[in-house]
Length: 196
Image 1 (spheres, one colour):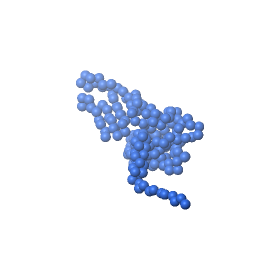
Image 2 (cartoon, helix red, strand yellow):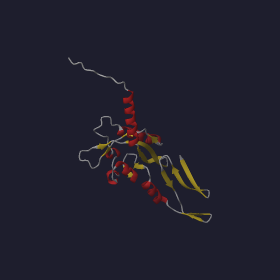
Image 3 (cartoon, helix red, strand yellow):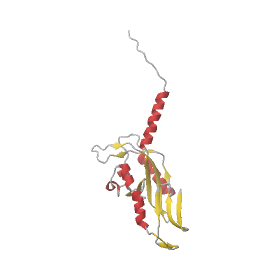
Image 4 (tube, helix red, strand yellow):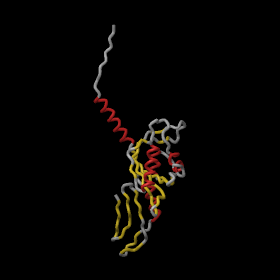
């Protein structure tokens, strides 16, 4: 959902609520004697850095351009681990998981964004993340709800926003409850052994 904010009949801010990003284009101007502040790029940078959701900014060649603090917190990474790196070099599939398909699914979603120039919401994805300080290359199980959106200038995609929500706890709880319900529904079979 998009929201356009007005003050004294003039637009002052635009909020794209589905990604949680607030984009403001304030200009210093006087309206009915009121001076409105001029925030420009500094406000955008601060809004991105302090957003309550995890955002990764990726160029069309899938190189990481920027990352906000929430994304770093969610993935237990440092900015230097990510910025300037290829996305799937920074976040490879878990080699210990034969069913890992996170890279394939995310690549398909980003290709959809590049082709359609429209946001693409993904279903909940199992995408384990590398434990950065592990000597043996271990990964931590994670589940995400991603949304990938284009950043357009003059009709061309100049970048993409990869927005993630960590849904690991909820997904594992649902999985465990499903496993328990299957166990509860299974018929009990008793075996007896004959001893001669």
